[in-house]
Image (cartoon, rainbow, N blue to C red; front, top):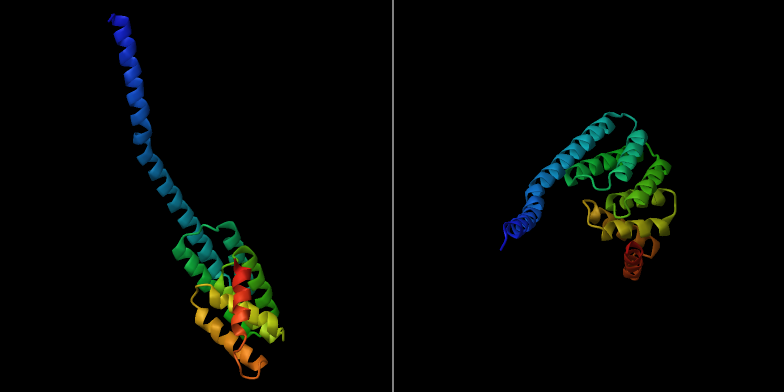
Length: 186
């Protein structure tokens, strides 16, 4: 084999080896960049949540939380739990102020952004119940019961109480309501 062919063959083999090794060597750097990006997002979301928590007005605070939910659907789980806690505190404060209209509007806005936000369904149900919209309230309670969340049992309890009040103390037929809510959540 001539020197030129041997050199071309070596160059070709070397280029194959480099093509296999370089992407593998770059992968740890890419993973580090992804990790850095996640840390930056976490820090930004944390700072934003701290700013939201400092707001005194519960309506303004809840509106900002809804905006955060919309902007960051991929928020870190720990921060999302913290944000959900702030949201429920605001809903409780508004209910104590007898502001059912505010609770309803904010719950509906939160659910438009996060349709599987079980806690928001509980508060929506309470607001609807306070407004005398019992069928809609039961549907909201049923959805809050079906979605795994920290107020799941409370939503079921509210559903049972309201359903019994509307059906002469009976829960017969409630399962149909729950199944209809399950279908709507799909």
